[in-house]
Image 1: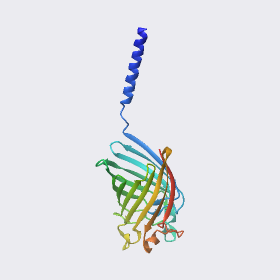
Image 2: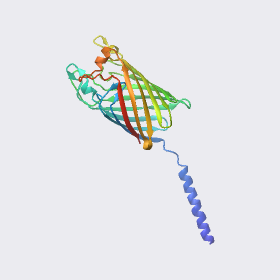
Image 3: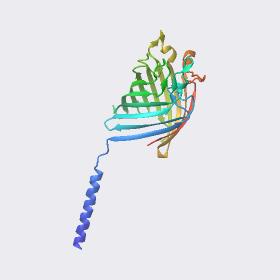
Image 4: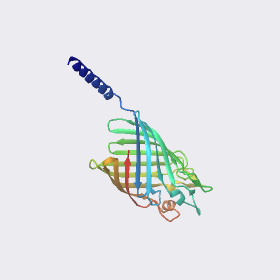
Length: 264
C-alpha cells in the first residue's frame, strides 16, 4: 500500500512538472496569416482595375513580434489590356497584379501606432512598343489612432504606366468605426497627386484626382467577412478621358462592390 501511494505521488509530481514546463513555454514571435476574397470588381484608389468584372484576390503575410513584417498579395486585372495608347492597348497581355511589401510597425502609445515600409506593384505581361512599364515602387508611412488612420505613399519612379512620375503621392484617410462587435462602418477619402511631365505636359493635368468610399463590413464565424461599399472620384473632363479605356468605359465612375473574404 505504501509503495502504491509513493508511486501515485511520484506520478502526480511528474505530471505537474510536465504541465508547468509546457505552460511556461514562451509564445512564438512568428505569425503567419493568409487571406482570400471574392469581389464583384477590383477598385483601387477609386479606379476599377477589372472593367467592373469579378476579382479573385488573396495574399500571405509574415510578422515578427519585434514589429517587422513582409507579405505578398495578388489579384486579377484587365486595365492594362483595356487602357488606351493610340490605337493599341498598353499591354498585349497582362491579367494579374502582384504586390510585394515589407515594413516595420510599432506602438507610440496604447492608442497610437505607426507603420513604415516599401511596396512594389508588379504587373507581369507583354508591353507594346513605346509603352512605359506599369510596375511601381512606393514607400509609405502610416499612423493610426483607435479607428482612424492616415497613410502617405510616395512613388520612387514611373507610376502605374505614367512616365517621369517620380514624386507622385497618394494620401489615404480612413475611419473604420465599429457599430457593433460584428458590424463596421468603413469610410475613406484619398488624394492621388501626380508629379513630373511629358513633352511639356504636366502629369498632374490629366492623371491627378480625388476619391472616396463608404461601406459596411460584417464579421461572420470562422473568420469570414461580408461587405459592400460605394466609391466615386472627382475628375474634370481631361482626367475622365485619361481613365476611360478602349471599350469606352470610364473607370473612375461611381462603383458598387460586394464581397466575401476569409482570413486564416
